[in-house]
Amino acid sequence: MDRCDLCGGELRPGTTTLEIWRGEELIIIRDVPADVCEQCGEAYISASISEKLDQFLNEYHRHRPERYLAVPQYSAVQAIGG
Image (cartoon, rainbow, N blue to C red; front, side):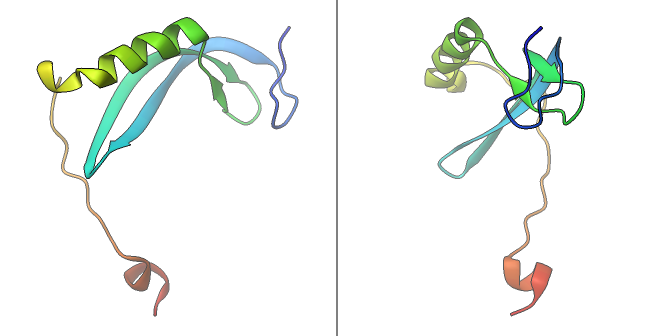
């Protein structure tokens, strides 16, 4: 049984969501296969999945997104004061 590098918890097959910035654009990829820590939720993606994601990210603009999301943005000054 594989263990989490962060907390030592057991890893189980599951999925994760990736948030990736490309310049000023946020790309979200849902349901990515990963081994997920039962204790802390850290996700580990295999090399083969990582390669496929890299290929997708090199040409993501050719694909039509599943949907678009409105994402609010705040400055640190707004969040914690200045």
